[in-house]
Image (cartoon, rainbow, N blue to C red; front, side):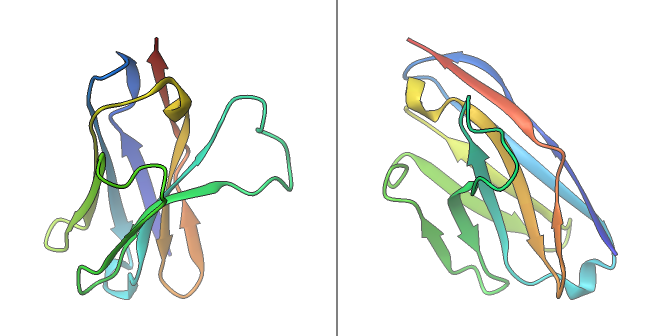
Length: 119
């Protein structure tokens, strides 16, 4: 099993920055791709797809949603089993609950951390 704990959400004005962290524990040697997803307000319903924000492989290959390219940076520290999401130039439409996603065979999700961007 792999457990994950997120931190770093909060309230920020448009144009500001936040850094999210995701710490993994347990069978971390099995971890493959790590990623961040988000669900905007009003879309917290069962069956609704969470939007993928960014992902990073064990080799450091990254992918980003078009909406965050150039503003967000995903990174990981394999020695610490921790992943980060640096979010700059935040916009009100980035407001959402952000979830850490760890693929290790099965998939583990974090509990979510709220990011609110005021205009």
